Length: 243
Image: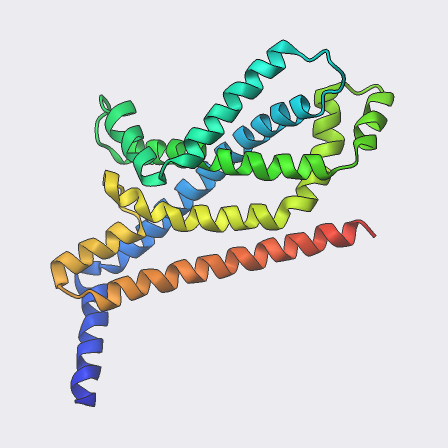
């Protein structure tokens, strides 16, 4: 029985990686996964910082006289955060592809752009709250110090507040990056050939389920461990720069 099991495992490895050059599905899948993750992270971080800045500026207002325009944008941001964080990522991706992208041709470029935009929009909602908590954790005197140096609000935020906030929220941002990387596995629903789709194709042609799915699980685990190491190293470097 041991020999039979070993032979089945060898056959599974051969069919998964060697037969018909199936290993290329994993290589191309890693490329797609990383492109979508990095693109969505950049989009999400920019959007998250903008939303967090608007909400923080609104919350930091003092006195009875409040900026009406800022209040309006803060209201829009709150609706955005409620809708995005209150609906499943897969539903958002399906709406983006079958509704927003309905008239587009089903090509690799269009599917990749759609996935980046959908995941970026979703990620920006979570990053916004992470960044806002970091901004609110910075001492209010830092804003006053920046304004006293002649900086306007935006310059003070970009040069003084946000760099300090990022140091405080780096672990949370790292967790969001890891979550984003793993969530990209659902892009298979729009036909994008990422790691999960590659494993499904191999499974459908070889009727081998264990090895393909175990392989992508190990690949995801390896990428997460690498990201965890890099984030930890960056966090230690930033911590040492304070001394």
